[in-house]
Image (cartoon, rainbow, N blue to C red; front, side, top):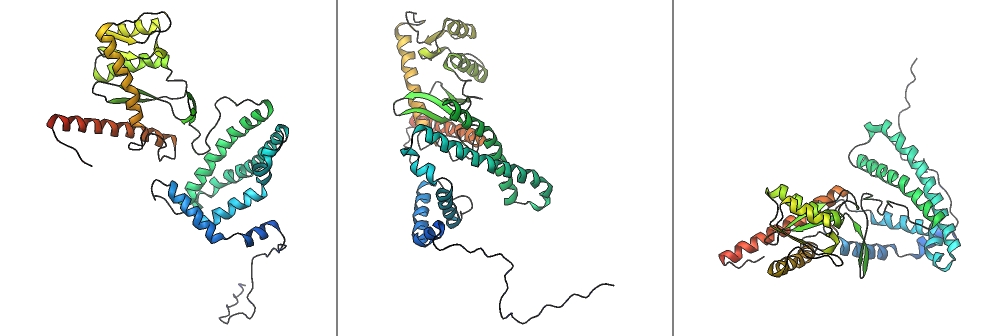
Amino acid sequence: MPTSRRPRSRQAELLPRSTRTTIEIAPNHRLVQITEEIDWTELEELVQAIRLSKLKNAAGRPPHLRALIGALVFTRDAMLREFRLFAKDKTKAARMKLTSAMANIVEQVQDGLEVALDEAPRQKMRLAKHRKRAWAKLHKLQETMTTLLPQIRYWIKTGWVAANKVVSLHIPEIYSIVRGKVGKNVELGLKWGMTRVRGGFVLATLGKDKNELLDSEFAVRAAKDAKALFGKAPKSYAYDRAGWSEGNVAELKQLGVREVGLAPRGKAKWQVAGKVKDKLGSERAQVEGCIGSAKSRKYGFNKPAAKSAAGMRVCGQRSVLGFNLNKLMNGLAERRRVVLVG
């Protein structure tokens, strides 16, 4: 026999009930003291000002700054306080011990996250819109940390950086590139090869990894790509000494390059002389200027507003396209004797 459901009372309760458990926190607890002492309104205004100064645009959902600031203060105080604030004053052995402890904490979080992510596919019907994107983002971060943690432990054990070290949690496909420049010994990103053609236009080639576009190989590949694109090899071709070798000279001539201007190494001789040599040297010197222009803020090649490796590839080619279009319009305006504005 079915039981009848007790009707709800429309009269307000004298003492409101709570279905949530209340945990009492001592007034002298560190987090309580921080909560009372910090001017959260002023801190939120400061963080918002810093955030706006770094944004390239206002696209995307607005962040919950108050919650994020509180979470940051909590993690810095509870987990990373000793490591962040006092590690510099400790010995190397003590710092290694702290780093190892941090790795253990992250590993425990990883284990729990792996269980949660494995359970999530069973609840696919409940995941929609932002929840699906959040799950995908967590899944990617968990996979990245699975690779990064052994690399961290390898560094703690040996003092050496592991091969193919992950340098970005959010875009693990990028890598470090040793440039050897003053003030910028190492750059982070993807490796590109730039080829300047007649008229000052630039062709951009993206390497699959940091070892693909070596100068010794790209010196010939750039000529092959130009031949495939334009139907014939360039008449004249110049490259710096990093791409020189007798084999490369012979291969370029076999491709159909008549004037090979690879700068020789050591006591090797130039393959060109006189005005041809001077012209190719001048053309080669202009490559750096084209690359520098493409990397300027105007075209956004450096530090693109991309959140994935695929997005970085698109931004790179888009920057070079913008540079070439601007070069084309300047050339047309000069031919027509028109002054461009804007």
